[in-house]
Length: 305
Image 1 (cartoon, rainbow, N blue to C red):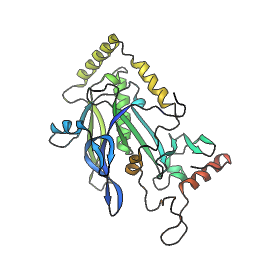
Image 2 (cartoon, rainbow, N blue to C red):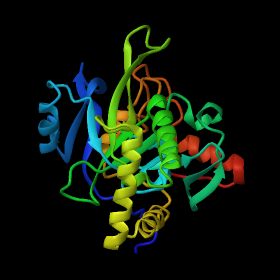
Image 3 (spheres, rainbow, N blue to C red):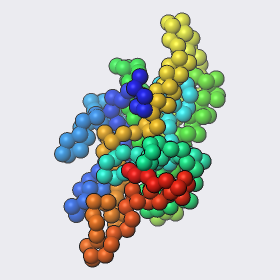
Image 4 (tube, one colour):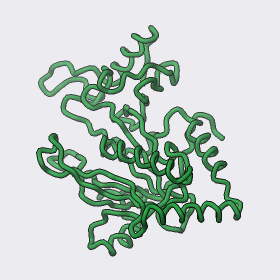
């Protein structure tokens, strides 16, 4: 296994509740009120739809708001990983990933472990540069038992709800999370910040048509059938954790759509390729300069991107 390369669950496609659109010459994220399943191929018009997208949509009146699925692993944090993440918007590579206590940050001397004060208390996180960022892998359909669709989110409601559901379902099923018949569901709510308009977040529930008791019985039967067939779920979980721990950062610069969709540049965050503002005034410190300053405060050594 190549050291320094995080081995993530195999991905067949993406699950999104929004897209990137062009407005006034800028590409900006736009939220949606339904799921969309796409392939991993992107063209000038956006991500190409996955064949399952139309198949699942047909039975729901055109609006895809629930997706039957199951999970790959019994351990909740293998199915759903969430961190505070700061990306370089030019390269789409992560620069700093933390959990609110410690972080791994790219510096001149390589990856270093430093204190993580969370975005609210970090000077590098000003202007939403660093956000809570979650990745959920789920299995949809029966074609590939180890292939998954990935849902990316920076929404507090989705992250909080998904983390809670996975912990609860794991507890009540006797650590049979991968055997439960589940459903990905889109929910709406209004908040003070949304000014009365609905916002949408993702939840996990027992699959439609089943009671909790029926789902638990099915999970027990599935677990017993897998054991008799030689399916070693604990070994699969161990292999997944070893693969994820093999690299400092789970994400690479390959998926530029993540930064474009979830970490778009704002007017008060000029690209570090622009040396001056339109008014001829010096630009604000670049992300690389902020990282260098922060690292020097911690260990007296400069850092670079």
